[in-house]
Amino acid sequence: MNIKLHNVGKRYNREWIFKDLSRELKANSTYAVVGRNGSGKSTFLKVLSGKLSPSKGDVSYHGQSQHDPVPTEKIYRQIAMCAPYLSIYDEFTLSELIHFQSKFKSFAKEIKESEVPEILELERFKNRAINTFSSGMKQRVKLGLAVLSDSKILLLDEPASNLDHDAQDWMNKLIEKYSKDRLTVICTNHHSQELKLCNEQINIHDYKK
Ligand SMILES: Nc1ncnc2c1ncn2[C@@H]1O[C@H](COP(=O)(O)OP(=O)(O)OP(=O)(O)O)[C@@H](O)[C@H]1O
Image (cartoon, rainbow, N blue to C red; front, side):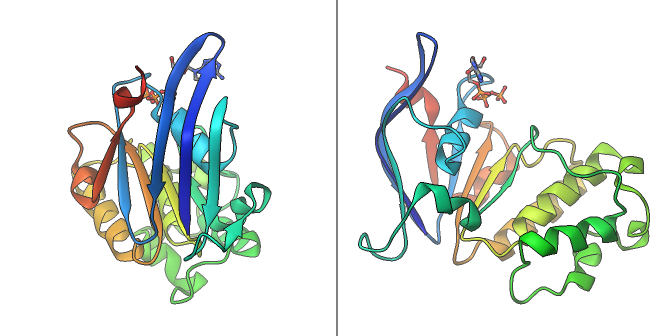
């Protein structure tokens, strides 16, 4: 799946968060969206996901060829997203949440539902309610469920938040392993470890003039 941006801009009230952004984001690539706090990285990701309409320009989605378009109202089926503002049902146990998720978003074909707790390195907590998990454990769950899903587009907003050094290594390996054959976009800061996973950077400050 590819995302094509043509002269895209987003404005809140009178302030342009970014504008004149034209770019094609391609399948089998991993992009880093960088910029300072409050620069507009999350806003950009929401526009890419189709959750937020651009104030100007067009966002379109297509498969291998330009002649294979996917309408915006159907693109959510192809997208998995992990972001601080998206919550999970934390009254479920981990096993229940994994089962619930599998009902509306399948896991990648090579992954069995029963293997997911082990991939998350949370096997021994699978029968515990998520609301008893630490912030880092919850982030592992949110991130893992997005990365392991069968979706052509993976959008990750600050995926390393609340993760310690070992957990960040786990995350990098997971993203690397499962980003083949998909388009991955990661919002992050200029100094993060995830940058080494990315082939290209989109600096929001380049689209503020
Ligand atoms: N719904 C909204 N209405 C008005 N302004 C908004 C809205 N959402 C975000 N903003 C503003 O848009 C700007 C960009 O916010 P955004 O959350 O996209 O930045 P960010 O780069 O992701 O920040 P951070 O690194 O702190 O997460 C900020 O100035 C923010 O206050």
